[in-house]
Amino acid sequence: MSAQPVPIQRAPARVLFIDNLRILLTALVILHHLAIGYGSAGDWYYDENGPITTLSTILLTLFVAINQSFFMGFFLLIGSYMIPGSLARKEAARFVLDRLKRLGIPILLYTFVLSPVLIAILRADRGQPFDLFQAPGFGLGPMWFVETLLIFSLGYVAWHTFAPRTLTPRAINAPGNFVIALFAFVLGVITFVVRIWFPIGWWLEPIHLQIAHFPQYIALFVIGIIAFQRDWFNTLGNTSRRVWLWSALTLAPAFLAIGIAGGALEGNLDAFTGGVHWQSFVTAIWEQVMGIAVIITLLVSFRERLNRQNNLAQTLAADAYAVFTFHPLVIVPLALAFRDIAIEMGVKFIFIAPLAVIACFIVGHTIRKIPGAQKIF
Image 1: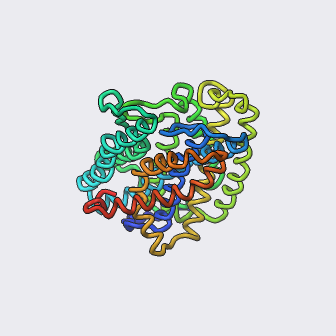
Image 2 (image 1 turned 120 degrees about the horizontal axis):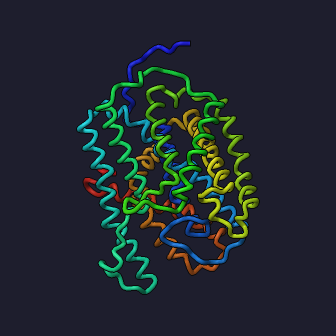
Image 3 (image 1 turned 90 degrees about the vertical axis):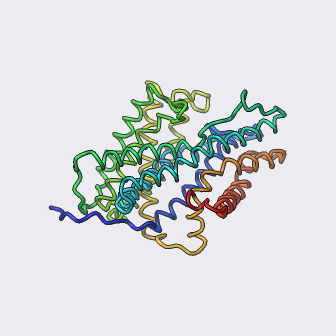
């Protein structure tokens, strides 16, 4: 069956179901970091050493593992999906200047202002004086993602400008479930190989990139570009959603089984993060298949059922980028404020989580009220 070439459509500035996905993913970023602070494994500014049960540790770790399997890659997928249309509207020079402003300025703001302020808050809480030279606190923190998006975006502009056209725009049905599953498995194998030398937890400094997750990030960014050219977001069907929904529901408890079999409960965690270990191989495969399963499930579900917005959703979508940028300065002081409440950590997470999400969106909305802020955030 041949597909008829069609002109590249200039995608509208706003696609409602994608905006709604950004709201969800931003909320998950907040909850992800909060969960690390309250007992899950991971890197975050603040870890609270309160009472925690084994069940809470397992559930928080599962929540963080599922998030990690898809949410930053999903951000890159939907971000790159919007790039060809934006580039067509603005042309290369204007597009690059816009990216440098909207991505570069928040990176500099976080690195040289927000991060030092956050470190100062933590040092003051520990009774340590803040010395700008001994403990500057400069760092990208979660803005590594914005840095990555900037690098990838500029790379696409360079390819689009100088490379020969190798992709003819045409409407083609999205790949079938077997091809998608094969892609996820191969991506898992590549991820395993990369983690032999760059395990989870190893960061490339000073640009603060965790190479262990970059096979997925690169792949999904490229697929987002192709998906726009081929109109894949609109041709994925409900049959695919059902298949991958059940796959995700099956893989969630499988993660626990992998952890128990691999000795995670006995503290044997390094074997899961990288190196030539069966635990690392199975974890990499699980992570990529789970990530693809969740992405397809959410993408089709939001397209079919949440491709609309009321006034509140429009506001939340507009504020999401500011929320992402400023959320560490909200949830760390919030956790400090509730630190002396002596309850089990899993219970505290459930209690603090909605407060953290609401507070972050309020702060993000307030930031965007500052004159000129909406041109950046």
